[in-house]
Image (cartoon, rainbow, N blue to C red; front, top):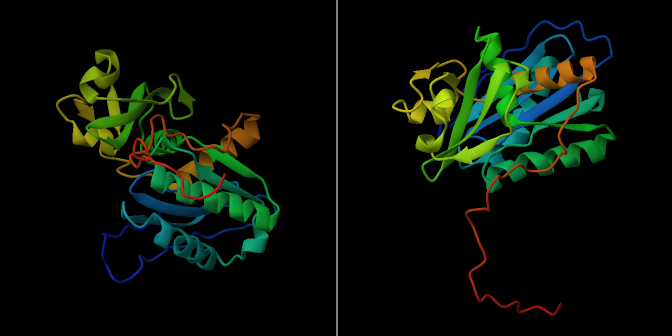
Length: 246
């Protein structure tokens, strides 16, 4: 389960812990900041122990560590118990995505545990499967600039195209007309004609479940590098000259 909040609300969202038989085996801390959902969760290899999600596209840097603190407290664990970190690698915008990746690297170094990167769209696809969507389907998130990040899936754990960024109207018709999930699909109902409302936002619990599945089946992980798919919105102006010696 998870909780959500609206930007500007003064109180953090409640976190509901799940009963956990964690015996000292796998304990994954997962989080994602590639979308407006700042989401964190703790997973013991069998279930999500606690999860927190706050919807705020502008305060990823402020909200992520408190979200981690909440799920750790709700699950009754200390950071020293963690055996691995799972982080969403995008696609997503530069600023938000960087927050999650830098934080994951910091936790990995401080705790001396592996860091696993998972495509953000794969987390949404897994959550769609938990909501009953079997496939084929499309996952699309908002890329701004009237574009979406998207990929096609044959099932919750079977992505069949590489993540891409396009204007919705430029997507192949056979992709856009499939059942679809994600905020990007919700923004363009004239294109994504079979949009499903669940999941509405990214879930760190689902992201962790993807990692657990891959670890159990010998699957591979992408590099723990940001998947931007395009140049950042903030650019150095043309003709800029450095004022410090090189």
